[in-house]
Amino acid sequence: MGNRFRIAINTGGGDAPGLNAVIYAVTLAAYERGWEVHGILSGYAGLFDTTKIIQLTPERVAGIVPHGGTILGTTNKGDPFRRPYEKPDGTVGFRDESDKMVDTFRRLGLDVMVAVGGDGSLSLAHRLSEKGMPVMGVPKTIDNDLAVTQATFGFDTAVSTATECIDKLHTTAQAHERIMVVEVMGRNAGWIALHSGIASSADVILIPEIPFDMEKVCDRIMENEVRGKRHGIVVVAEGAVPKGGAVVTKPNEDVGREAVMLGGIAEQVARGIHQRTGKETRSLVLGHLQRGGSPTTWDRLLSLRFGAAAVRFIAEGKRNVMVAFQAPHMVPVPLTEVIGRTKTVPTDSETIVTSRELGISFGD
Ligand code: F6P
Image 1 (cartoon, helix red, strand yellow):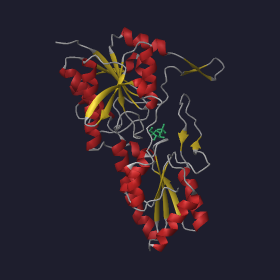
Image 2 (cartoon, helix red, strand yellow; image 1 turned 60 degrees about the vertical axis):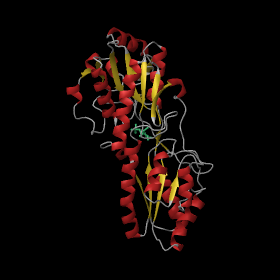
Image 3 (cartoon, helix red, strand yellow; image 1 turned 30 degrees about the vertical axis):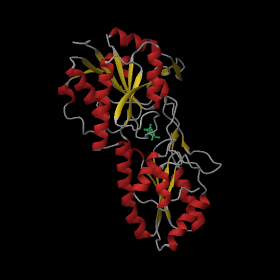
């Protein structure tokens, strides 16, 4: 009989379909080994307020795999190194409360924190590991932009949702002979735009990795007319940039939120198309629809494998690593190899080549 660990799990940062499946797998795989699992609510908040810690048991997690969101809740304002507080004059200040948090973790007799997150949450996990909190990372993000792992859970579901939505746009675009410009998520990586765009037969796909030229975008739109098609679909990643231009951002009004909020490029592109071609053009932003709903079968399987591997690696004595999917295996990789390195779309990738062969323009 090996060690009987007390492990904790938290889900910080933006949610992604499959989080509950990871929680389920971690709980079951730990239970099979006779360990205890504690769920930390709202990111790391439970380590500041211990009423926000719940014991996870097979009964507690039964039936959660098909559900989107996370039973533990999450936040992207939970940085323990920069906690907001109200100053005596009523303004908001920030202070480092990470030591307090690591102390609570130790006082509760917890052995390892399973941190399920994207780049931001895994960076926090890494900094906490340097302060003495043993960590096991699990890669989560619909953006698919984490280095070293070939896949993150949530991406497949987001792409499926986006594809389904774009499919629906074709019919209304055709009926009105309009150009529809649809903005999808992905931050500074074009994975969601590329995969949903090719799957839904878009005419133009604009991704951050290939700065676009509005004239080229419009040339492709007008080529449709020659082909006898009077409508068109443009899929644009929220982080796409025009040549010589900059990403479009929204004002960030969330106290304690670090990441820049992207959004608004579809509207700009739509205006540019209308001005240059005279064609009736509409834009829409799919937004958080892409993060919601039940995970696809692929995402469930990936999440369950990530969760079980996290527990397996803890049992093997691995710490301060992230579980990476390197097909067909799950492997532990040091957190230092993951954080701060965005996995973007290689511009010579097979999927880009395929898109071009199908007549899809990248506006370049
Ligand atoms: O990282 C996941 C993601 O959905 C990005 O694609 C998007 O830019 C961001 O999170 C949105 O964050 P929020 O939910 O805080 O608006």
